[in-house]
Image 1 (spheres, helix red, strand yellow):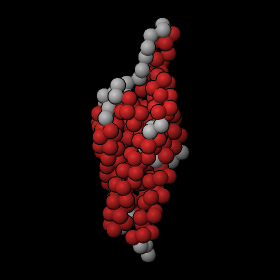
Image 2 (cartoon, one colour):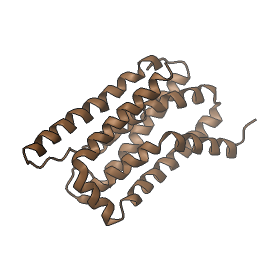
Image 3 (tube, helix red, strand yellow):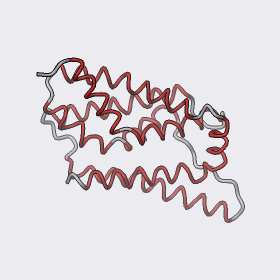
Image 4 (cartoon, one colour):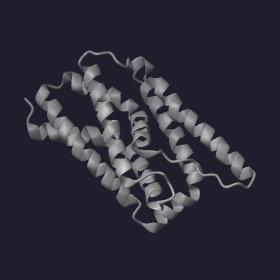
Length: 199
């Protein structure tokens, strides 16, 4: 029989284990926001994270309860979105640099842009969350959702703290022409490998 404390610990472990990559993305977004040169603000990051995770948790809970809204065998298709964005953006940046033009990949625009990337990045998490919610009782689901609310806040704060050092921000600004496209490509590969392994 589970207890609220055990359920909370389980939720923290579940969130942390499936969202290390998201912490790195938040750091990158925070660096863009701190630069002041991007259409991105800190509140966009927070709102986008909550919107994205809210969508992921809602989908996981619904699928786990028997509503086959997104069959697992098709999750790998989501990997094509970040892969395509990353490859195209990187190729455009390489062409621009070969012509000695300055090229910076556009950061996500507003909270909806952050939410979309959060959903794409967390698509593989459906494989972990869906069976968890399918086997969990109502009380455990509520505890997990509450803990996830605090975990998202901790992730947003942690990602912002990683960019407090000026050298980190300067390095990201200097190399952002390839950092964001490569991050998209890695997300796509990670989602592809993870989702194919569960098919």
